[in-house]
Amino acid sequence: MNAGKEDESLEVEGLRLVRAFLSLPPEKRAEVIAFVEELAHMHAQAEESEGTPAR
Image (tube, rainbow, N blue to C red; front, side):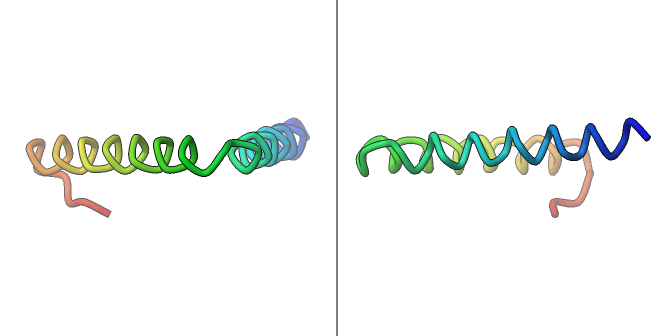
């Protein structure tokens, strides 16, 4: 029963993050996107070095 409440909580948190992102000026949004892309790239490299196939 808690799983449904936890899913709802994560959904609400995700919507808050989207709203916060959309409220940023365009140049700050670009910085956020670049940062997330860099993190994803670093994560993919770490998985490759461990032998885990990238998604």
